[in-house]
Image 1 (cartoon, rainbow, N blue to C red):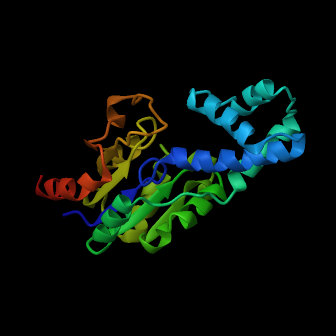
Image 2 (image 1 turned 180 degrees about the vertical axis):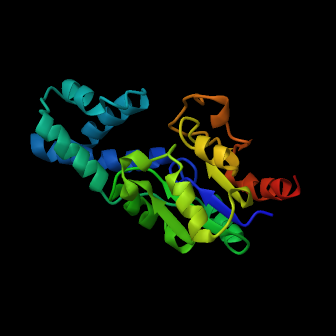
Length: 229
């Protein structure tokens, strides 16, 4: 019998690209104010570079296109602006409807990796606190406890007083989301969102999810199937 459903947040409950768009808008305005440039123009350059897949050096590449220089201290400032901005993101009607439905039947947990306070600001913007009985910010446990570490999953089981085989974990990232819950005995589900950012392959067979769906709308019916198996 399934008693609890645990979720990842980014690219599972909402499109993470919307968070990046929100963050780059604030970063672009910061750059524009500091260098006397057009905020919209800076944003367009940042977004073009990011959308091309150049995630790690977006800021340096943008500086080159803008004809300005970002030293290490300024890059650090922009990263701080990005991580500490209050995101303009919303939970989709589909995610909201599914969470409302599941909350009446299961204990719901959220396990989210990422820097603080960014992850807390996302949770607040998405109004997730009202849906979840327990939220684990892995950053509070220490960077070594980010997924694929089993620590957050162990804490969730202890909090709910359930066994791993009574839980389903829903995530998106093949590189880190499913290895530990698979090894512990969770049922695992991957949501493949069309706009997802993380496109990498699973590092091993053990890291593959047990089930895959292309929309959170399909989760309630899948849970019924899992209950029968």
